[in-house]
Image (cartoon, rainbow, N blue to C red; front, top):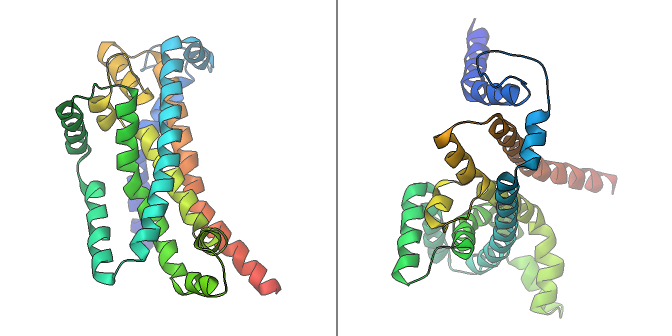
Length: 265
């Protein structure tokens, strides 16, 4: 009875979480515009989405911002982890605690704070401000992903490479980087996913005429829902889901592969 209740509770949670998303996915393949009746299976809303210039422009902006911000945040976050690892334990703890604040802070507070900062310095809101904002809130996620790998490496291996005559750059490239690469990949995927998924910070820091998928969907919903929005939302959900699965599966896969290689030796 206890096991049955545990399974029932788990199924109930998944129903509450994913029933709205499944409804959205089903409606994206429904030929009828009505949300209350099913007609026949169709892909015309996906075709309409691809022919909509506004949607394609928003998709391009979303991918460009997500890719550039994820790459930049990964580089900055990784270098920050290297610097943090070299600090004294007390200082390192304070820095890591400060890194947690943006993760716990409400997005609306971060968005308004960034907007007011740009306006205070006379910076007009445009694509650059959105990109800077995304890099800012993605860096803590990268540090959160890379730092555990950095702790596993420690400083002894790096110092040993230096004692053997390797330059700091060569020691980092050949000793540190291969060990922290899984964390960097996870951090990149997490940053990319968070950037694609963001709405609030983008809404407060974008200029006139600049839209991402999230802001465009919000604007469309306010004036009336079109079925092509269902198709677009389904693609966004699918992309985010795939990236999250990769981010969660990749570290375990690499660990199992490394364990098998060690056993073969």
